[in-house]
Image: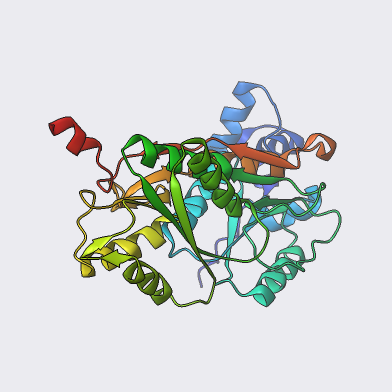
Length: 334
């Protein structure tokens, strides 16, 4: 009868490496030891196929090296990018990510918070919509796009500057009458500042504008009706449109095709987010959110030990990118 191979222990590693048990513990926990000792321990770990019990290690250190990310979904390209870059930022620091996709369900957001706390995560990063979300005191939390009080840092793009940049770009490209098209949450959050920024840009350039604003849950067909109502003799009243997201812009481009309006010859369109088709070309001309930088800042703030120095709001700069729905290339050919 053959003997079952026993699972190697830290003591076995110490014997194999010819070092003290404490030295193995330091290497496993990432504490400094002499290079010669570290190499011997790492060689022994590989030889014995020793597996660190992360859960037990976490209980001992009162850390699980796990962070929960609450996000509406991974279907929207911007949310997917955030999840990707946050995971990369955590991996660089030897942390794991617990992904919680809420599908905009406010009750689910609170349930995920509870679940994350029960799993003893070291912190939570959340892009949330529940106005009554309860975060227990003592658990590190960083919000994306939404200020939740002075004790919880918020990381966002400079949405006001992005809206202003879109208006100024349309004006610079020759637009005379433009429209702002929005669909989004009624919750007060940073992306709502795109509207104020756009208005400010229009006023500074004496650009005539109108707005069509929908709340989450409203039918996008209201945009169809709005644009159809502004058709005169087969031509749209507006020569420029700023859409609050690239998703809205993508929908509007299909509406414009049905209305037989050429883009960008008849009407120019700018979106917001920086969505790329198959990771290469932008789906439209757009205001680009720095997803990688947002992710890195969220992780940095979350894992920062001194809470007293954490800023209540960090706004990161946005940029404009050409994506075929504005007239830059047409100008170059003239």
